[in-house]
Image (cartoon, rainbow, N blue to C red; front, top):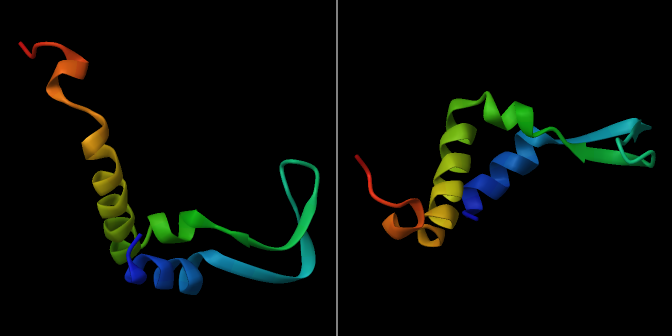
Length: 69
């Protein structure tokens, strides 16, 4: 993960609340990461997709999908 992506997550997706946030697990936390904020931001989406692309490309080869028609 790039330093720029980490900075964008910290600046645009990390949210601290004065009250606890209710989590889907039933627990609570005084912070959470709202990655939607990053997904809708041009620079954040671009950095995020670059990170995913770097991670996923080595996992698949042409043989994994068979022949293309």
